[in-house]
Image (cartoon, rainbow over all chains, first blue to last red; front, top):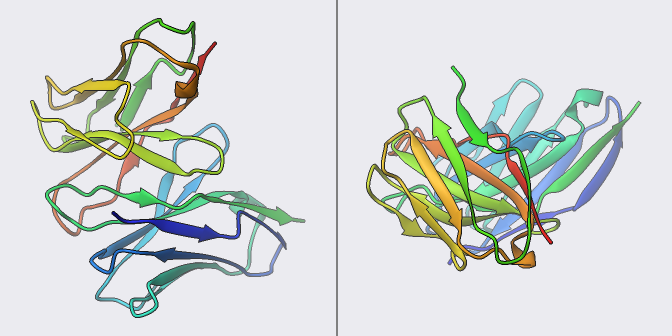
Length: 113
Length: 114
């Protein structure tokens, strides 16, 4: 089955700097790669996703890149703000009658003022 | 819209006790899922359902049972709780089909088994 590895487990950056979180996946059949943000005491919330037929996707200050050959994808957050502090999860899946996401271990991002 | 609602939010069980976690969604989603979240391990799929009356096993199904008698509800049962089931449980729902895969998660149930 699919296995998703996420790095780093913790990341601390200065406000205004950029943050990058990386994930690798094992199943070359995976074709959907979402990123979730989880704030303290809340459930994960989808912030951006990408499909295997696209190499990059942007939404304001966040972007995701996908390298199918290397089987890795990354989340980029630019001009970080204190409200970006949270735990971020990557995930991968193949649509096989159900969209069963396999999640990475999570990255705790701290934005220092 | 309330989205996905989980009850209860917190619960402490003694080893061997049973309980049911309730998940309700008001978005008319076909698919529903139960995940558990443990430190350093991300979220792992316990069971899922692709429609009313259907359920299937996920990655870590042992010790849990589920039922989907109504489209909007997905119940997770622990028949005989064990300390290893101490975790935060999240329910999620989604539409079927590519292009609508994004999950909507509930706010979680924190379960402690002593």
